[in-house]
Amino acid sequence: MAERRQVARSKTTNGALIFSIGKPGVWSCAMRDISDLGVGLQLHEREELTSSFKITLDNFESVKMCQRIWSRGHYIGAIFRQNCDPADLECVIYRGDACNI
Image (cartoon, rainbow, N blue to C red; front, side, top):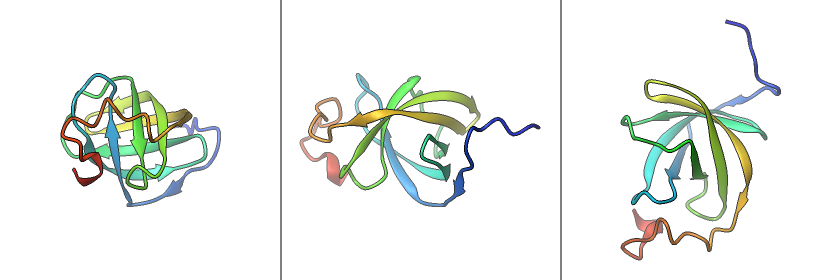
């Protein structure tokens, strides 16, 4: 399979939290690789993730908007769209304790 990425990604085994606007909850996932332009993720379950979603790599210190580019089973690839304001998390905070999920 030919490599189609614009920049090289760094392999990682760090975790991340993802969430979608309009869908309650936050899901944990494993990052497989990351670059300045995007991320490869392994979902723990086959979540119904919207094509646009938000991701935090540092427990809501910063939040990035993502656009899913491809998906195969539990694996997805996404590009970073723009940075988000961590204060704009009303779509996630249903119990008032989003950082302790």
